[in-house]
Length: 404
Image (cartoon, rainbow, N blue to C red; front, side, top):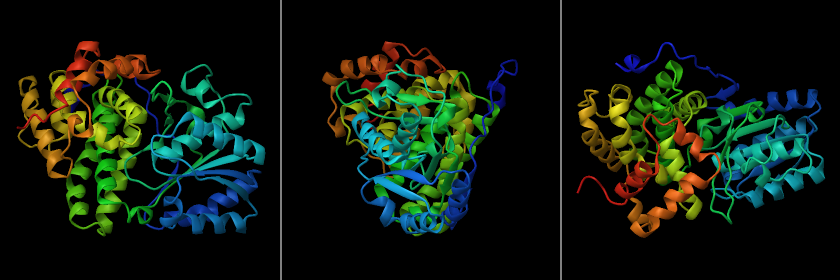
């Protein structure tokens, strides 16, 4: 059904760039990666991580051993928090520069890996700050090699050329996309994710779903972005309830990670639009807000507004979760309510008002959506006009549930 939405006269770019080691035990490929790095002279590494997960996941023991076996030295910036700031990236890059780092490793979810990608640009370009990069005052063409050790099944950043860093004084949370920050090596080992909390598990999985919805419905969507998106959402629909019931379900963890990989490839090709453009102001204003929760709270309203333009595609994406969808434009509100019901069923029971947002915040959020560098570019490729009226309506309707 979704193929009828494809413009076969539109020339699209199909991106399948990084090599990713995937599966239980993939972390043990670190020995091969370290050998290859050493052979290329990459013997001094800046490691960028959060405070705990890189060790508690079990990843660090393997990585440190591989570094030692191959005479690779490192320095660790272990201060990255969710929604990392430009200041933190500046600190990490300075640490790496003073150490003489020739490569950067990001260990964690999207925050440490995105911070590592941005620091990798700075290490290859003297005198450039994180703000220069995120405010588009500097357009990079090079970065030092990047190793991505992913610890969540939602970000997709280990598969693509994107990074997000917050500028705290303006509450801007821009996104960058450059070929030079594709990871040279990536590891996706579900064994490293077995201890994710139930809340993290839900939110990162919903992030992968949003990547897929947006990439499949943007103006630059391709058959590749749609087909990978469809598989991603089917897998999350099947395995997220299973992992909620049993966090030790290895098969479920494996396929949720595979879904995340597909979502990352999907948005590397089809890009993103409304849901991410509108979530970034939310977590820019409230940095402690989980990115995946922010996305989940506004997804139903986004579905309502884009459904008439992409009814067949969205019905196809969610056909296993909402089999009642026929793919006709008149069922937009029904689709939004059913998406909200599904989110509630997998554990997302909050809306914006539950996180402290009110009608008094709407105008500020709308303004941030249009002022933040890069977000207008996302809105420009939305399947319907990304004007202020539509953005305001999505924020407003996301304050409270559709299903009373």
